[in-house]
Length: 192
Image (cartoon, rainbow, N blue to C red; front, side, top):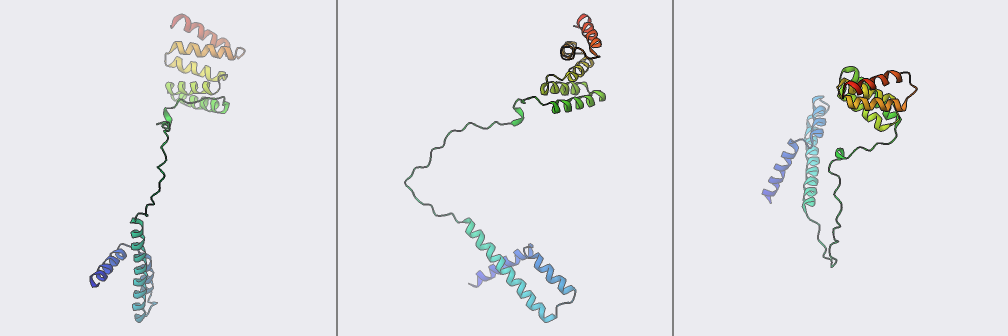
């Protein structure tokens, strides 16, 4: 019995020194530093702190012991339910093809971002953004003319010609239409 108690107090000291009762010790230490407590109350305060630490440590020991015990198993005559095969979830959401629906706001946003990249001289990124814009809104003529310009800067004549053709289809009466038709003719003759 004596060794059990000494072991208990040794563990209690280790728990306290690790900081479980740090707040209690800090509060009493502050009171002592301010000389609020009289010398004979120090003993009572220390005993109260140790009593509190003892209760906390006993609760921790009992709680951990209760958590380690397995609940009793009840034997029932019912067989375990059969596992139904489920389709495995998609491994990576980013690998799924992106679904596009009509979204003119997103298309305008993609065109603005494409313009940013185009002015920075990053033509592949700009062309990709313009393509995204055409997927969000297939009738956005501005995206097609800007895509044609970006493809032309990359020297992809065929893609530029197709983008310009689509622009002319969508915006035949646009003031840039004549200029774009000249570009299409120029690209068709010289750069195949």
